[in-house]
Image (cartoon, rainbow, N blue to C red; front, side, top):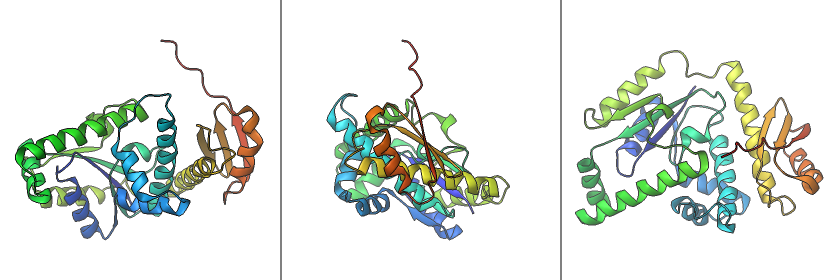
Length: 268
């Protein structure tokens, strides 16, 4: 079993590669629409989630940005739920960043020449060349802003990925065969330790999603980690501690809740 994430620019061929991998490996193919539908279980409209993901953050203190924090917590919980059993390919927003913590994930980045992307956009969206260029530039800009805002990294940094594939030199089919061959090597399966890490990660993301949905704790912005059923909530809670404990302990698998102060910010 393995998990694959595919990061790609708009119309760069990443979606086609993800679908090819899912077909050859008999994995589930998961995109942001699937995740948005899953978040609807928690009473958030899929269209609302997708709109939030398409719009880059405004400023760090706005109410809008807290809403985005809420949506991100729900999206992360959704992607973890979807891939927790392994045998999954995810292509969409920041999959390589949403699935961290030592999990056995193969992180791919797909790039393609601008001309390839323009032709794809024009054919699939019935755009003029100028419209296609404007669309591609806008989507890439928004995705860059999102990852810088949420994680402080450049999504185009190759060090974030295990493999960068340039479709200028590879067809999608050839790239697909290459990745399938990589998965036959050791290192991307789910050994027992990875299964335990995934279980902890699932619990942590479920707790965080529960906190943002409960009216008594929905104003919080915290970090949540879990280990063997012990949930640690890091953040400035104070009066909300007992509410947070109550919410967390309702999540299946949580048997104890601890609180920690956030780490002090580094001086400028």
